[in-house]
Structure formats: structure tokens, C-alpha cells
Length: 309
Length: 281
Image (cartoon, rainbow over all chains, first blue to last red; front, side, top):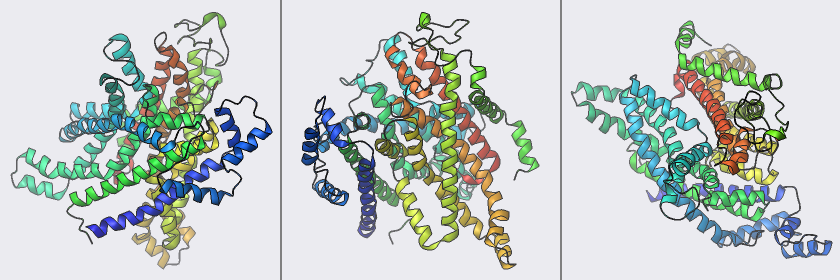
């Protein structure tokens, strides 16, 4: 078990290197003069040539790319992702903004599964019925509506017309409801389709036919045999789905002005704040690698077919 | 590629036909936009700002007097066209790499698959964000970003298909009787790839419309005054309370388009190739 874990960890290292290099390359391959960007951020309207030279010296932009990359990696390994062009310390900012994002993303993930399983199971078990078609259409619709449109629909209904919930921003738990719901509905619809199709596949398998012919109650068949394997199918994609949820968070945070990491990176891109974007890519990349690792291990635990070699 | 039985089933599948109709309709709208639209999408009717529906402006006007319906129709060119363009690129790149990988095996296969795995480990939107950061906000940048990220999934699927096809009897027989690699590819492999590729492409377009609209909504994609649907929603934000229809109409356009492609793709998958299994969409 530990050997398996170690092997996975080792496999993750080159991926992490790839991420950091990718991030650094991108940030430094972009057109435009970073010194100019920094000058603008510091509210210098007409930076003189000397100002720019001074900034370049300060940021040590003159050094060759490899040197700058290694310096940055060294800093990053020690936990220092540097300061953004806008002046804030990157890692602490990322951490706090990410905390806010998780406040929405984690409940959304849980909620999406709570939506997906009942709907998916119902559709699979009632295959061909009106209920099945309705829920399939609903799932398809949920997966097709852009999250920003859904967000504004919720705002219009619940804030403008019904005055039940606050429009945007952060504050009480009431502020959490709509962003979480928006994320959860989209993800839940997509997950429901997966649950339905994986359950249908399982229920068509031989051992299910055996169970039925043994005379087991249908519910036992569905739950102990079919559902177990659907859960497995969902866990396999759990890491990826959570990653997608985080990506969707960028949009939802913009709609609801939620101070999360998604908005932070969008603002950074808009402001050409390359260190911040670099830091973000590495941060999120590492997080996802870790999540994938955990899901991998969870999968190994859950699937009795896989034994630690 | 299609059997008479398949064609019969397709003819009876109402949702698929409806979806197909919508897709064709939208494509036509995109192509024929200048003739279909009642007004010039950029023309400002300054006497009529934020107007409600009327005969000259069936869906009203926006905050600077542009006709909403015309913008929606022209928007299909960008939202749909952009997605189609990226899909084309992504499919070509993905198929090429997947086929090379599947045929070569060995070191080439390993290298390509490592790259694919690395790309697939991350949510595509985040990777696209990183690329957009490098090339700067703009429609072209976003298209490049989405194209450079989206091919990995297709490469992997194509590789799998090629691997499974390699060992088929007719391929082995062809090789045994002296068939060249080119022969094998054209006669045996390609026909089996078309159906799954059509399904994947259809679903991909749906995903890309959403991604393109999303990035434009964030301000990183299409820029003013391009009438891209996601951008239109972003521009309508300031008028959330006064004129929510500025956001609702493009939102409906996006939803209908994506729904049509998703539905069509789903149905095509059921009809053509149940082997593709439960999609992870």
C-alpha cells in the first residue's frame, strides 16, 4: 500500500515540474514589457526611461530565462511565490482567496452528488418511462445552460423579484446559497447522466442477471450490486469533476462578486499580472495533483479488483 | 458506415431530428446573417436606447441603440463559428497524434501519451486561462488557447480505437497478404473512425460554445463590439435590473445551441456507436 503511494507520488513529480515550467514559459513568452505593466500598477503615468530601467533592475528582468526560472522554482519550493505586479504577496493572497472559493466549491460538489444520484438512479431504474425521459432532458438542459446565465436567472428570480436572497458579495450564509446552487446544478446535471449510464451498464451485466434469477428483491439488486459500481464510476472521475468545478468557479465568482481565487486570476490576466498568474497555475496545479492522488488512493481502496502489486 | 437499420432508427428518432434541425438552422443563421438580420448589428439607433420589443426591433435595442435580434443572429457567426473552427483543429490534431501514437507504440507512443495525460489531468478551462494570460485577452487568443488544450482527449480516444483495430482479423489478414500501412489505414481503420469521430465532434462543439461564451463573459475572449453571445451577456450586466432581457436573450441562444449539439451528439452516439460507452460529459 505504501509502495503504491510512493510510486504515485514519484509519478506526480514530473507533472509538477511540467506545470511550473509551463506556467513560467507562458508568463514570460507573452508580448509586452513587464516593466511597463509594473509602472502602470504603481500609478506612474509617464514612466521615464530611467524609471523603467530602475524597475527592470529591481525585478532582475535582465537575467537569462533559465536563471530566472530556477530562482523562481527555488523560491516556490520554499513557499515563496513572490509578489505580484499589483503589490500583494502571492501565496498568502492565493491561500485566502482559495479558502473563499472552497466555501462555495465543496458544498457545491456535495450538493451536486446529492442531486445526481437520486436522479440518475431513478432514470436508470425507470428506464423508458416518462420520468426517465423528463429527467434525462432535465439533465441535458442543466448541462447545456451556461453557468453565468443560470446565475443571473437565479438572481433575477430570488433577489430581484422575490427579494429572498442578497444579490452578490460575501456576508452571511444567505450569500452562499445562490453561488453554490449555480455550481451544483450544472455539475449535478452532468453527473446525473454519468450515474444513469453507468448504472444501466452495470444492470445489464451477467452477475446482475444472476442476482435477479436468484430471486433477490429488485432493490437489493440495484443497490448492492448496481449502485456499488456506479459509485466506483463516479469516484474515478471525482478528481476531474472537482477540477472542473473549480474552473466553473471562476465564472460563478464573477457573477456573484465572490472574492474567490477564480476572480483573482481573471483580474490578474486582465491586468497582465504575470507573477500572479504564474503563481496561480502552480498553486492550482499542485492542488489538483494532490486531489487526483487522493482520489486514486480512494479508488484503490474501493475497487477490490485492484490489489497493490 | 451506416446500416439500413441505423437509418431507419434515425428516421424515427424525433429528438435527434429536432436537434439536427436546430443545428442546421443556427448554421444557416450564421452563414446568412447579413441577409437574415433586420438591421446592421453595429448600427446605432440613438433615438431608441434600451427599447422594448417593437416592429423595427423585434427583441428591442441595447444600451447604445443596437438591434438585439440582429446582434443575436450575427452572434452565431462568432459563438458558433469559433466553436466549429476550434473543433476542426482539435479533431485534426487529436486524430493525428492519436493515430501516430496507436500505430507507433514504443517510445513515440509513450511520449505522446505522457503529454496527453499531463494535459488531461487539469481542467481545460484553467489551462486555457493560462494560455490566454500569455497571449492576452481577445477572440483569437481564446481560440488558440482552447485549441491547444482540447486535442488531448480526442488523441487518447483515437489511440484506443486504433489499438483495438490493429489486432482485428481483417487487419492481420491484410498485412499477411502484403497490404501496406497506407492500405490498412484507408481501407480498414478510417471507416471505423468516422462514426465515433462524428459523435465526439458534435459533443465537442457544444462544450466549446460554452467555453468560448464563458471566456468572453469574463472579458478575456471576444471584445466589444463583436456580437458574441457570452460578451453580450457580460455587457448586459449593468442593466440587470432595468433590462434583464439583454442577458436573457443571448443566454437562451447559447442554451439552445449547446442543447441542440449535446442532444444530437447523444443521439448519434446511441445510434452509431454504443461502444463508446457512458460519456464523461
